[in-house]
Image (cartoon, rainbow, N blue to C red):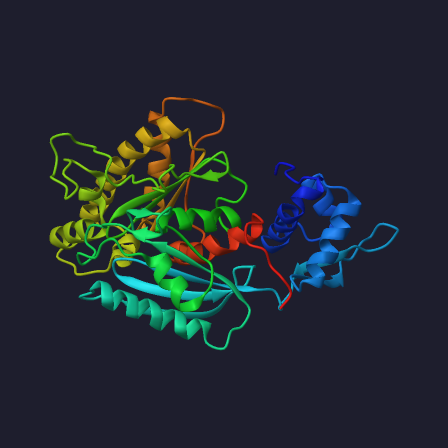
Length: 389
């Protein structure tokens, strides 16, 4: 059940406009009456907001919804094709990808480049190339969202010093994009961004306390607590990959020992799978392999290690949902079920509802869609105002 978060004060007109846009765009509400019930706003307030959004070209009315009851059939509200678009850019260790999408998160354009032998200059040129392509001929783009491998500083708009990232560090990515395209730019960590997309449009929709775990070249996480993405005062998002699961374990580039990332980052797990099986399969292919005892043992060990770090994190956060993203979406379903069972067996606080473990709705693309959501959420929150062009 969604909380009624609308505000009737005229001072909150912009916030309410964003809220109504969000509820229609994410499919939570499709009629005025549903908006009244969900927001707690008056019928007149909703009517006025809808009229304003229609004048701005953000909403439009569609065919009537069939109603068996006597009386007038309600009119369905949808996002207008004339509504502003947003661009999303994800910067990972292995790829840089860009999309242009509408407020329903429907992709209109998509471009991708691989990351090989990168320098800061080559990275910037790759970003320009991708954004130039998706923004070409578009005159109704509201903002650019960026999701980047971390660590990052949201406050400074910078990619700081990620491990395994070609030695690239301290890139002022927000400033670089703003100066070229003269658009608002919103940056967040790739896993935080993925969680944002899942909370608005995917498998975290309706949940308030969520832990997102992304396993790829590194191991990262996104945290949502009471409906808000976690970020500290200095704009630093969380990093779960450097939680130690063995004080005497493998050395990690961060200086710690036994970090989760040292065991579960995709290249490490893939190397182990290939070595013990003699098969040069992809991560995805190993996940689909049935009946191989060596593969099963390696995935079981990965589940146990991830459960150790996850239980410690959940004991702090009391998350109600764990989402797996990046390469972990290729884990066999039996491993996902085993992880859920182990978390619930070992967690400290027991309540009636179990902690659920699911794969991300957007699968491998969660961070990419999340990059666009970094811009979309600014419209939904009322922080980014939309005017008629």
